[in-house]
Image (tube, rainbow, N blue to C red; front, top):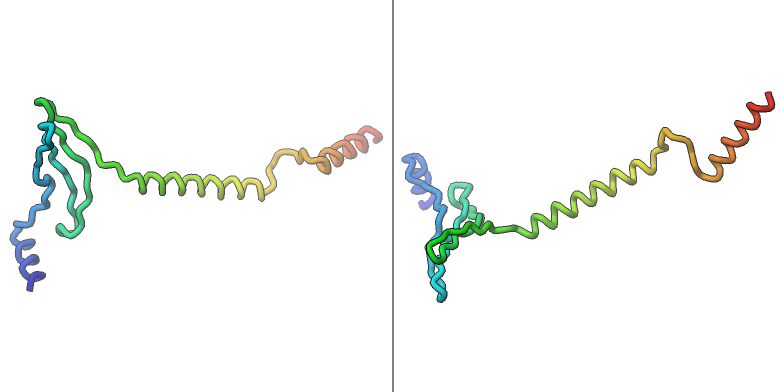
Length: 115
């Protein structure tokens, strides 16, 4: 019956996503306030960062997901490899600069000069 209670709370508008976690203080006197984002009616929580308060100054420290950054780098590299492979496999519109292509160019030039 917990589902029905959650739906009733949702209908009443009493469901509020909790954004700030419990503040705690370290041994050096620094206060840390974790911040998270909730989605899916509070079922999924993603860390966003933390406020760090030390000597009367507050600093925002974002939470960085290194896995997501590495995945993005890998996908960009894969896309670059696919695009460059397709560019190499298709014949470019400029002249063929291989030995065979240069030989054919020279033969065509000599044939046109003899006419």
